[in-house]
Amino acid sequence: MKAPRLVIATNNGDIGGGEMMLLALASQARELGVPVLVVGPAAPSTLVDAARTAGHPTVALPVSRRAAYMVALRRWRLQNPDGLLWCNGLVPSVATSLMGHRVVHLHQLPRGPQSVLAGLAKRRALATLVPSRSMAASLPGSQVLENWVDGIRPFPGHRHDDAVRLGFLGRPSLDKGVGVLAAALQQLDGQTPGRYRLVLAGEPRFTSETEQRKLEQALIPVKHLIERPGWMTPAEFFSSVDVMVCPSLVPESFGLVVAEAMSARVPFVISDAGALPEVAGPEHPWVAPAGDPGKLADAITRAADHGGCTFAEKAYERWLSRYSPAAGGARLEALLKQWGVTPSPSFSGGTP
Image 1: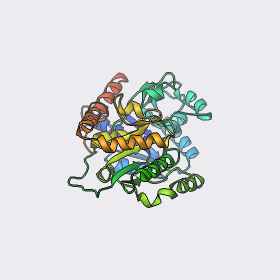
Image 2: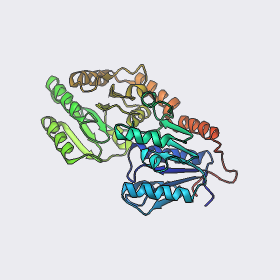
Image 3: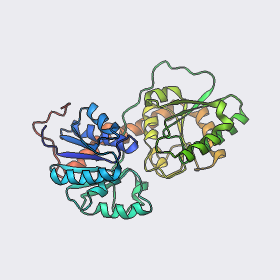
Image 4: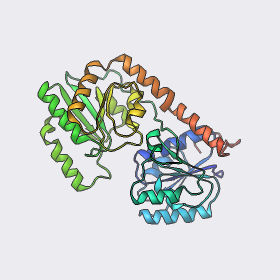
């Protein structure tokens, strides 16, 4: 394998939002002609396997616990200093703290003790990147690299019954606002019985048993209105819903599912938590205060009644200009050039 010019170290062995961006970064770098190497733990191997399936060279460090991964990653980097090291999250950033020729890319705002670790991790880094202005405002010295997502094409000819299908895609949990969404659905069903149903898609990864029990309790009053298909591809999900709802209570650092909804031309309702309004844009009409079931129900009603083609096209154009792979690739190319990472003349950009 040709020596990499970009080495991307994962935060987790499993795949969450940050790891989805790692795969997107690796793919765009390859499209730009930059040889990439992805490094992660051997267990869980989900991320390394996905990178390998996508055609990227990988290194699976023979560890499974986080602390062991951090030690192994630091040792590996000392022995393999070639290429710009892209630390995709706080874990690899802390593991390689005080090393040079690396970038810190944080997908979540460090809080509590993590803030101290983040301060150490940033030292000697070429840059600290975050996905939104909202997050950058809380992390002095950082610069924004907005996320991007592939275009979603819902399956053609899909037909629903007369019910308006609301959709949630992600990690079903109370902090993601699913309890508030259930309360809003109960209000909507009281106003217009049978008009609304909810497709609650996703898996409760990184959620404790206690949190899961609390969520199940919150869903009981509307259990008969909810479909729970588990994990779905974005195309499957957006083919199954009329309005996507992202009712998060915690400040979101970006909101990948919002960008996906824009690309799929599906109307969406969001809370005002963190960067969600920033991603949706200043003209987005359906924003509810986080934690307010009544206002969320009102926004859902308006989206269901007026979420026509005009809005869908405006949202799609915003995705195309800001959050598409082409837009993200242009931003990445500018940063890599700034740091002296240029295409390899003999690298085709295809699958190795």
